[in-house]
Image (cartoon, rainbow, N blue to C red; front, side, top):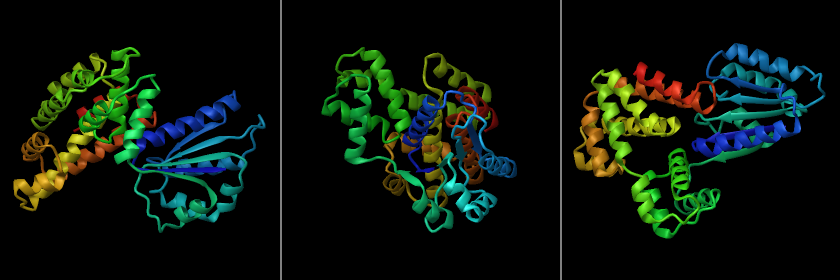
Length: 314
């Protein structure tokens, strides 16, 4: 059986992957037949080991769970998958293809998976679907919220589910099984962390890594999630990159506001910070953020370590 999980909403996709792994671990207590293959690196080695695992018969007579992380960029994997499609599709083992990269829906592998696998696309939530997700996430902690709270937290956190989940967890700990009100949101979900992230990025742009690491440590000491901090750094550098591209095209400030749809304060900070980086520098930094985020979310690197390494490298 093959599961194919793909899309931009990495939070729900990661949760789905965790559910599949948890179910497997309950049914297969030994845990020796759970294997991860990260195609972000060591392509040939991963492909060889994967094919070898599929050929092998488990001595425990249990199904294996083989998790393939981001294999779409590996042309050798795609060729091998098409050539040996029957082996992959007909195997008694469970294969999970976990793909965060953009998918070419005309690709032959994608079309084959659409026919042969249990596919689930994770599109970023918006509108009523996002509201329902937030309500259910509060309900997981036994909390109720009103319409004002719902709209306020979405306005502050947007549709970044990593950040929303972190904020909801923080509110649940603070409210201690009582109904969340607007004052709680204003107290706990502050834009101050955004201001602190701006300070961190200012320190990075000034090559003051010691100051940037100190600011990150302050957040961690206060109990802020390293994944949340990564998401905020990712969010802000994405904004800077968007603004920088428009600046490079000589777009006036009002056009920048209109096209990016950023809050004026965020747009202004992003505009000034974009002046401190070249466009190639920003693209390299954004790639490093992507890699750190991937490593942290897939468990390859401890999230705090990934965060420290990122700040040290940019």
